Image 1 (cartoon, rainbow, N blue to C red):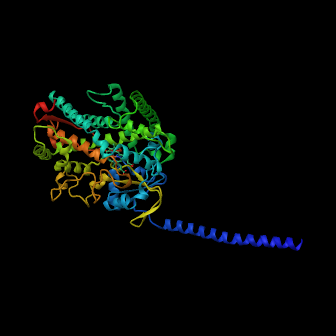
Image 2 (image 1 turned 90 degrees about the horizontal axis):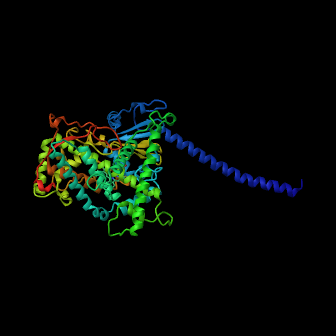
Length: 529
Ligand code: HEM
């Protein structure tokens, strides 16, 4: 071997060692860091919680009313509880300080959503706003909601429709009462919410004189009910992958079936709107534009002329699901509690008679002055929040709360039902007492927010409900009209205290049984017609 070759080998060998040794050192440091981190994480304790079984975790400990089971766990283990649902880490809380930590201080960590099977099948592959994980797509669609659909100006443009629907609700109840029949409040309040939403969204009324046609209305009702039911389900396949192979109740099959029907329905709506725009040319911005018209007029992503149909369908779906059931369920609960407490009914009627009088119907502009009614709604949200777990959130990375380790992708069940019945923050939790919300200085009672996090009907932080002002108006308006226009009592043979207030679990938490009541008109006849 020549000396120059020898030199070359030595030289390369030396360079090789120069690279190898620092690389090994760096790898060693990284490896040690990972080991240390891992050790540190494992050494950090998870929040306290019940012992769990292999494979199932705590799933077998949950009954028909998981919000009550979770509240019982908080009572036993403290304000922040860790549970394992199959293979999924989860936490639950009913404590205002922990909730503030999750939704305000650590909003960035906890603002995502789990990709459940229902969200994949029924929300266009999580391509909507409400069920989408946090990311640029969610941000874009949420901005569209805030800047184009739910603006004050847009909502004001539907005030006339809302007034029509309020009158339609009163007339509907009045005509049933005239026949001497009891009122099924679930039906009439459901129709009120649905009509308000579909007129704003699709430009159609589904129930009543101007109804879009009984067959279409029935189809629409059927699909939305099925959709709500499936979205509210705690589906075991999300927690135990093996369950999906068996799917003994055929839930996933049902999801796929509903997915297809809903998609066909939305496609038809978009088609009808395109045709209408085609006939008239572009819909006049100043004229009547429903939400579908607005969405069809917006540009798409990456310089595309229009939004994708899938995005439009996902948004239509969100608005229907988020707006109808929430307000209808809240109204039915409020009616049930007030009929159960005749002194509350009397007091709210006195307020209505003094603010509105008895010679005209309530208008939207009256609602800010009806403080006792606002207390009734706030008390209803305390006892019967429309979203008992909000819509479950998910953490995007590992973090700590109160020194406890919370792993990445932990599912978060904020128990608003438990929060409203937490004896550490409320007295006489089972008593319906609107007066507790009255401000000492008589100032306006706020419904949609509270800095103390003791009531959270519309949530807080990045995921808070963008439809809260509309939701509050729909609830206050229906209740104001019904209390002002009628005296209410339970059906014959029942006493007010017999009114049942048990609930069933769902994405929104309805009364277990539809509320049936007797209405007696209390205003002059010409006001109803
Ligand atoms: C009484 C009526 C209503 C109640 C009680 C209510 C309540 C809620 C709650 C609890 C959430 C979940 C927040 C979270 O997960 O942190 C939510 C989300 C949402 N709500 Fe409402 N809501 C109502 C009406 C409406 C209306 C009228 C609309 C629209 C027309 C609407 C649109 C939405 C949307 C799009 C979301 C998803 C937000 C997101 O994930 O970024 N809601 N609502």
